[in-house]
Structures are given as C-alpha cells and as structure tokens.
Image (tube, rainbow, N blue to C red; front, side, top):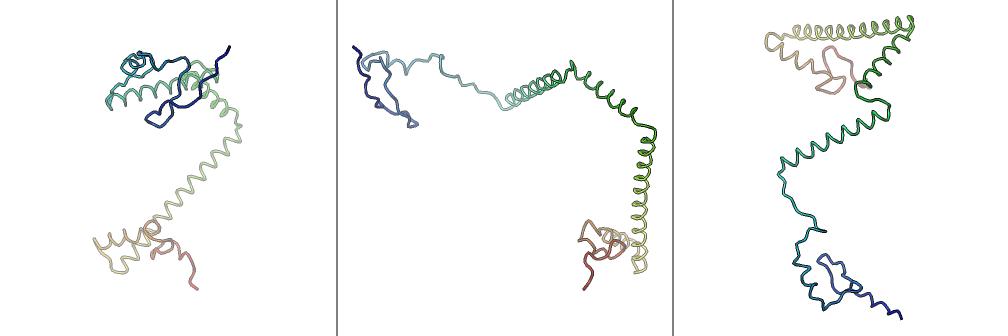
Length: 180
C-alpha cells in the first residue's frame, strides 16, 4: 500500500519571505534538527575572506593580464601562428610584398600625390602668414604700437577660434551671411 503524500503547506518562512516546505521523511521530533543551526561545517557554506583594496586591485590586475594573454594565445592559434613574433614577421612580409607588387607607375602616382599634399600645406601656411601680416599692417595703420599692438594682434587673430565665423575684422573670411 502506498501512503498519500502530506499536503504541501509551508511550515514557516525565511527572513526574505520565501516559504519553507517540509522535507519528506523528516521528523519534527528528531533532536538532531536543533543541532543543524549550531553546526559550523563548511560543506555547503562559503567562507568570508577580508581582502584589502590594494590587494584586491593587484589580484584583479593579475587576472586581467592573464585573461589578455590567454586571448592573445587563442587568437594566435586560430590564425595559425605560434608566437606574436611570427605574426609580426608575417605582417611585415605581407606589407613588403604589397609594396613590391606596386608598379613603377603607381609609385610615381603616389609620390606625385604626396608632393601635391605638401604643396597644399605650404600654400595654407603662406596664406595664414599673409593674413597675419595684413592684420598687423591694418593694426599699425590704426595706431597700435608696442604692447597694444601685441594685444590687438592676439585679439584680431582669434578670428575663427574665439568668435563666430565671419566676424574677424582683419583678414579672415567675409561675413557668414551677406547683409540684406
């Protein structure tokens, strides 16, 4: 004969409000139940360990470095390389091979493009120097001398950085919006 299971009603509640159900086969009259609360066996409980902030920081740094090394090793093995040096040698040889594959015409075109960029940069610098000279000449014509000239140059040179676009009175660009 099979005995029916006892009704599933909670026998109590935990501090956080979760119910405590009876365990089948346990007896409420058993004296060892009272001893379970006082037992300090480490079987299922975690011990608390106090660690200083500095020590914890060192431990976390070490774990992070270890994880990075493991990730690099995994990536290298996926790419088929044994060491990082082998990967860097492979990349270097690939770059050299790509450069060697460029024809003489392509090299000349690249050199011409570089010269054009350098010329454009030189022109920009020359135009900036010319604008500065025009500002200085205008300030001198207005009567600025000595320290006043230096301060006026600084104020007038702020043009695009310190004020709205188009408000530089000496040199710079014209107004952002033409007057109506």
